[in-house]
Length: 144
Image 1 (cartoon, rainbow, N blue to C red):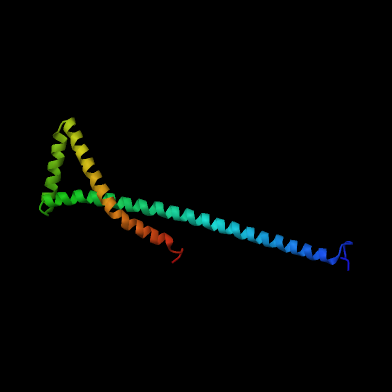
Image 2: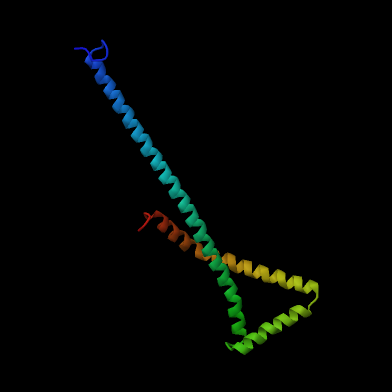
């Protein structure tokens, strides 16, 4: 039996059909692979953006907490009364303004060192819980 177009047997047309189906399947697989890659890259980009935003918010929260410690310190110095609190802040400000540049620099240096030590300690103590929470949230499927 010969095919309608040429002098080749019908078996050749069967091979042509198989090759055509393989080409279609390869095309569909390639399209699915591209879509999967696109989904994966979008997911990675979304996870990276989420990680940057969450980490920034967490770090800002740590900084604000440490700055709040300074306010609490002055409230304790003022025995919990607002007028005494503001008197303590006024006392510090007037002494700072009256000091010479060397003493101002030394005060600023000690202040920055104190805040950095407190920030590092706070960050180190809170980091494991933050990492566990972020890993758990990133492991969840989107929309859940």
